Length: 196
Image 1 (spheres, rainbow, N blue to C red):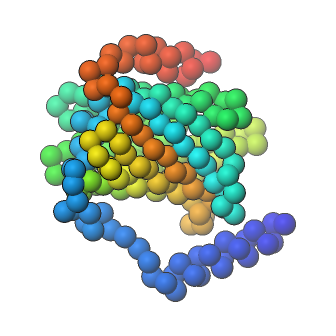
Image 2: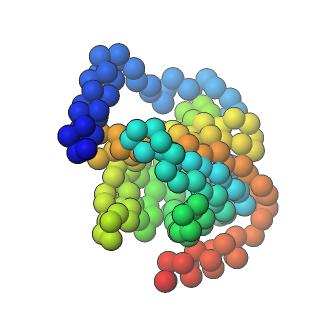
């Protein structure tokens, strides 16, 4: 089983290298509407996502509540995830969005700092995420593409990598529900889950 897994990963990597397919954030510079994190991730939002394993099989689904607060390019984004396997998890992003579109962020389960770039309707950023795995933790590299569809809807495509190989893929849609919503209740929920 282990041997066939690594053979499949090697074949997929070779095919990717041979086709030379890649994208750059600059490819999206002219696309509108422009994605600004301090506008889209302001107030209340909701996300729906599906995780697929390295074989492309659906492994878990989730719904997430989000709420963001921003001031002068600095933001706090609170997230609570409800997974189909019964898990409930939280994340509190502390984000900085620069005038040139550079984005940086930290969170409790992110190793070091996330960094990326906005262009047009898109954001590409990358970070190392520490996830629960087999009673321990595992660090995986996350490559995140976010594309704004319209002012209220965004599609996020994420790939997770270990030792340079893609091990999982996540697709989610995010909708901004109320830009004027108060984040106090979700902020409290995030703190309670983090304290458990």
